[in-house]
Image (cartoon, rainbow, N blue to C red; front, top):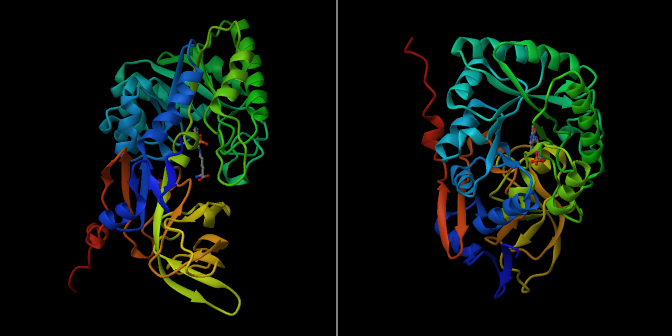
Amino acid sequence: MTAFDYRNGELYAEGVALSAIAEQYDTPCFVYSRAAIEQAYDAWDSALEGVPHLVCFAVKANSNLGVLNLLARRGAGFDIVSGGELERVLAAGGDPARIVFSGLGKTAAEMRRALEVGIHCFNVESAAELERLQQVAAELDVKAPVSLRVNPDVDAKTHPYISTGLKENKFGIDIAQAPAVYRRAAELSHIEVCGVDCHIGSQLTDDTPFIDALQRLLQLIDGLAAEGISIRHLDLGGGLGVTYRDEVPPSPGSYLAKVREALAGRDLTLVFEPGRSIVANAGVLLTRVNLLKPTEHKNFAIIDGAMNDLIRPALYSAWMGIDAVKPRSDVAVQTWDLVGPVCETGDFLGKDRELALAEGDLLAVRSAGAYGFVMSSNYNTRPRAAEVLVDGETTHLVRRRETVSELLAGESLLPEA
Ligand code: LLP
């Protein structure tokens, strides 16, 4: 099943025409498919059937409460990186015992809250963080469950901004230093060593680097076992890529089959932190052509979605598919740059696209379910877009459009002179 398909000459999200969504909720607007999210989550979960496992959705990829809620109902765990994401998961009905807490700058307050609610595990990224966690856990008189996030120094061969497992990256503990940090963790009174963790990068389209990293982690686990430090769970992070254009990433099923083969005979609970592969292709950004501006050098279609709504093209030169919601044949196909109204040359969602366009046309920017709304900003005092979740023939407004008065609400004028 693909959630976004043409029917009667127009693009639908499940059983609802995108034009009807634009009519009801206005544009720009993110549209998600419940079925597509559930299907993508199930692909992970079912590929792990028969082994103890936890699929922890990486909340950073899409943290809308409606989305988190449907994953929580499905039994998902969650990978969080901030106290804010923790509160989101709790508000969405997520089970704290299925939360892993990643991120390299956890504050004492964040640690305290996570200990109070009883999360599954802290993915600790430095020796200093371990000492802080010991202190906070001691104050609360509890034991903090810990994995060390190890940096295995493998090249994920992805965009440099989203590659995280190389020695020069800020993330994790150098695998060569990890045994020493584990020894320290094992002797701390309020730390309980549970697992080992890594996350080598995002949008990987080849599973070889994952398996290389896994082999390095297994060597580490065996070395620790010889010292009497037992590791119960292995967290391989997220990072599985998706098709934006013509990439052919492995499916969760084929990737996980290789992982299971490499782990045969071992008694380990498997943890994964997929984000993009669960939500990217379950969402589109719906935007409308505001004005057409053909020039001598370029044809610009000025749309109402902009870099503040979807920053991936500007930030990573990411290519996102862009399709007409109602393809028309009454005007000629031309080459268009699809640009937003923001005052930056980098404000484009697509360049050199062959489209037949007229003012007022609706466009769908594909694969916008991951790292879309969550990375949006109010730059140029643009209220953030609405988010709509489609479930069959029904739509749910899971985040209403922001208003300008909400944007101004937290600010104040200076006192009278
Ligand atoms: N776990 C950790 C510790 C992570 O840092 C990330 C992503 C994930 C899991 C989820 O990875 P995924 O399965 O989504 O690849 N904004 C960028 C992507 C940044 C990814 C950051 N970390 C983009 O739009 O491409």
